[in-house]
Amino acid sequence: MALNSGFMTAARNAASVSGHDGELLATARPDPDGKHLRFRLHDVRTGRLLADVGTEPCPSALDDRTGLPAFDSTGTTLAYGTASFDRSGSVTGRVRLYDVPGRRVTTVLTAHDMGRVPLSDIAFGPGDRSLLLPDPASPDTGVTRVWDLRERRTTAVLEDTSGKTVPHPDGDLAVTTGGEAYRLPSGTRLPATRFTGGGTALAFSPDGGYLAVGEGSGRVVLWDGRLKRRLGVLADPDTTTYQYVSALAFSPDGRTLAVAGDEGTLQLWDVASRRRGGSPLPAPGDTVQ
Image (cartoon, rainbow, N blue to C red; front, side):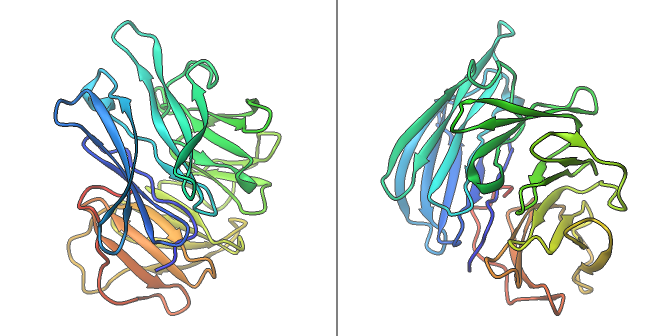
């Protein structure tokens, strides 16, 4: 299995993300005392523990126990951490960048660095030069900040975003699961496209030719990468009970799409034929995003 973009999760009890080549799995789970989230690297095929990356304090609110792991496009850097409100109403937490081959932390972003706002997700931006940091929607929309890793500051703000934000590989476009589209790096919102949102997960193919949109029904809709045409649907006609699609990732050649379900399943699909590629792959058993 070879996956180009990461899987990320925001589950109460665990989080997981798969790396660029599909050989690594990063997980975030609360310690038994519930006071810390522990981040680890595993071999995705055998489940063997490869590295104990580190720990971060659990947010005080149980429903906000969110680990935020995300691999960059090469799978060599892992971003992980938390940022949420504490009991006093202040935002606490931090995000670390972890060098996977070197097994060491290279950068630490504090709550002050990230603007002292809580995070609902984290993703690497175009060229892995930035982080996309969306805050929780309140009540329906929020903002996503583009945080430049070299300049160590926010360089653009995407207004009125809803849901997960994903950049186009060309670096000039970002879309959300809510259906909004933005020009990068300016952050200007684009006029309405045929893609109306309502998805539960998004992924661009590495060449930017496809946008895969997962749905709550378990289906995946394929669009062209510029959101002009709906190209087809991936759905198992033999399935009568669907899990919602919690994560998507294309292989480096764009021919295979990994589809994760909210009950911990991970299924590969052949994009051209719209058929499943064998049996489901092993997963940690928690929601994969």
